Image 1 (cartoon, rainbow, N blue to C red):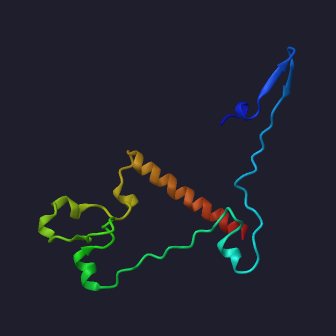
Image 2 (image 1 turned 90 degrees about the vertical axis):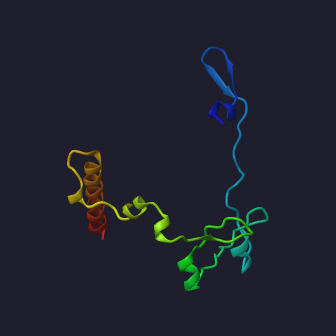
Image 3 (image 1 turned 45 degrees about the vertical axis):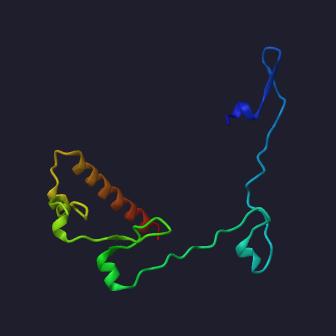
Length: 133
C-alpha cells in the first residue's frame, strides 16, 4: 500500500494540500502479557509463542549406514535406501565438498578476486571487532 493510498489528499486552491484521512497502523505490535508461567506461552489473547519442535534423531547405526535418514517427506513410507557405490555415476565422487584454496585459483578469474575480497573483509571485520574490546 503506497503512502498516497494511506493518506488521501484533497486539494483546495493551487498550493494548499489538506489531509482528509489518516490511517495509523496499530495492529501487530507486541502487547503486555500475563504474569507467571503464562508469559512464556502467550503475550495476549491474540499472540501465542510457538513451542520449539524437537525432531527425533536416528541413533541406530545400521539404519544410518543403509538409509538416507530424513529423506521421506510423507507420513507413510520409508527413507531412501542407499545403493552400492558402483551404481552411482563416477562424477559424484569428484564433487568438491570444501571451499577452494587460494593456491588452486587462477588470478585471472572473478572467483579469485571475490575470494581475495571476502578474505580481506573478514580480516578487516576481525580487526574492528577486537579494536573495540
